[in-house]
Image 1: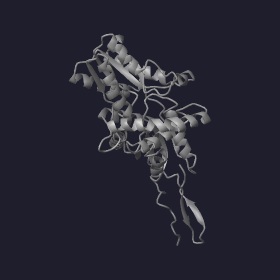
Image 2 (image 1 turned 135 degrees about the horizontal axis):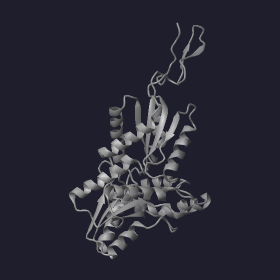
Image 3 (image 1 turned 90 degrees about the vertical axis):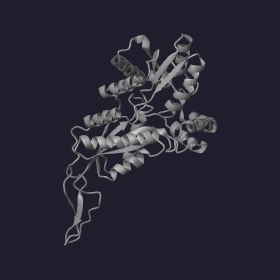
Image 4 (image 1 turned 180 degrees about the vertical axis):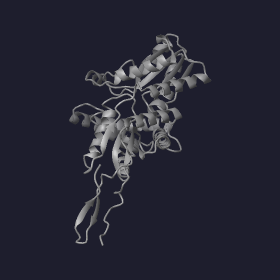
Length: 364
């Protein structure tokens, strides 16, 4: 009588895995936790394109001795009883997407959430999918506009983990959805909903995360995709050109970044007599330090102190139903042709009466 040596991860079912990846967050709003997070983030050569030896000196001798304390204070301003807003909202979004995918499809699609920097790591999220018989993987970076600093870095992290696996799943990756119809509609609907509660401001500012100008000059498409997103949303809202503008926030260091800068735009608007501003950040999937503290606190004070009378920050899509629905449609579009219920590609191993191991079952 043969003995079945099949492990629990071999069977007839397989999983299409969806890996949602957001930027990341420190574990706590403390100097120590922020320093650990910043060290991982700012050590990524995709993020900082300086000679490694030079940047190591700048990062370890200057930045990590100065910036963590200041950033920790900013995180303390937005931290909740449940932890980091970015992580909490991202978890809710992933759970909502899982429910929506199960409701729309009878296939076995499993969603896992990862942070590019910090926890849950890309490695741990991929390992959790692997444990569920992962055979096909769709990576969804939560960055609507592509940049090598964000989406490109996610690819690096996924590849770094998968290159250690003996059996690598089929792989697809969404590199941008900046002009996706449902995404544009969701952003426009978020703005329209805000305008139902208060009169539209004198100017709608689309603020995107900044990027060093030399990255754009080297061929990064981010700048053009940001402008395309803003233009599509403005057109859908029926806005004249003078009613809206694009700006870039969160610059770091002394070199020139993409312009115009958000703080400079707000000061200029106030100087020209614009007394009310609505500001939206369509480059962020969920609210985070850059939107809740930098925009809704720092830039609000800047505009009001310069003579503004009303500053309204329009929140990100977060876990809104339209966001979940949009992501579900995006996922289902990109997994077309993948059947989640297939003959397992993992061979079942058993032994015959002579104790010889044999493989039972065929790969897909």
